[in-house]
Length: 469
Ligand code: UDP
Image (cartoon, rainbow, N blue to C red):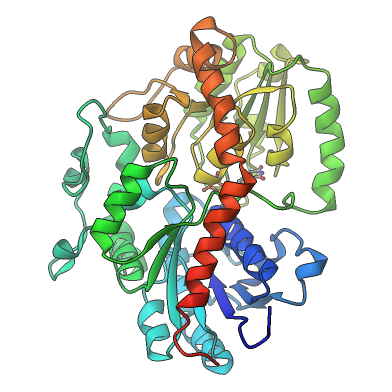
């Protein structure tokens, strides 16, 4: 691309791996088109990025902004993966203090566009003042965005904070299929919104409303072909272009050499298992389970009698050995059949291994894309944030089996875990689910379709640059 036509785009995600990774992939695509990209984040999060492909390194550069200190946060916390979920509001408080250093960077570099996330409600007015165009990028489904953003008429004044009781019913701006019911436990995390707002200074509802409301364009990490009904709704709600960006599957495997070394051992274990027999169990980078929940999950996997590979997170804020949280004698009883892996696993590689049959997932959107992109049937186990809504969307589209939960408190039993896992992976009744999951591999992994969407999004940025330089 001629230098005069190339854009300078600043990319600024919220401090969570589930956001940082798709924003990084979007950055790679922009650089591949010849645009200059400044990926802005905090030092520790930048260290966690995948390696920048060598051919893009002169266009895609990182900009490090140290995270200002906030008392309630542990010293090295820079991402939601470093803290228990209840501390997230304090991370947002620290994130809000990045406004000044980011302003200095934007004033000095005068980019054409800034692509940002829901937490940066202070950014659109700032960018507008500096004459920088603004793209809100939602790394989640169009469906979940319809739940978190009130329509313009609701935003005109008044208290935007939703009360817990508002979540026992579906928000009134969402047209609803009568046969789909959302349960309170799936929305509990969102219902904490008012508390979260008090601790961080701004509720998530306001963050979403302002960051989307004051953008020039909204990009969503999904495809119209997957959720046409929700894309249509979002256009109506926002009265501005709402563009699919495609699923942004990974161009490169995450992580460095350490992970690759570990992959050798994991692959050796997977190689010994039968074709499509293994249940891969992983709950992303934020969700934490109580000892009771871990026990039920463990006993359910044991009862299923299926081989499994279970990734347990090492919690940076806890001295507790993750394995000690498992029921007594569990590892011995499942030896040879079940592998418990503590740490950051090479998820995409594992999912694409031929021995994996099903994916017991917390329904984080990255994980769903990776699971369906590998054609794996999903066992749905949402824990927080948008995950409950994703589970409902996937259940509605017959792409997974939900582990049965108590409607009020979200509790579950090992029986329900074993039942869902067996149905998804081995039982005849689950055959059609497995077939549908395999079909999804074509949609989620269709490089041409994904490229078409992202190309159209990038073209929109190129054609709507405010002032040619
Ligand atoms: N991930 C990984 N190894 C792990 C845990 C997570 O590679 O041990 C990656 C996973 O492949 C996905 C991301 O981290 O790309 C998690 O994102 P997701 O949206 O699924 O969940 P969240 O981070 O929001 O919990």
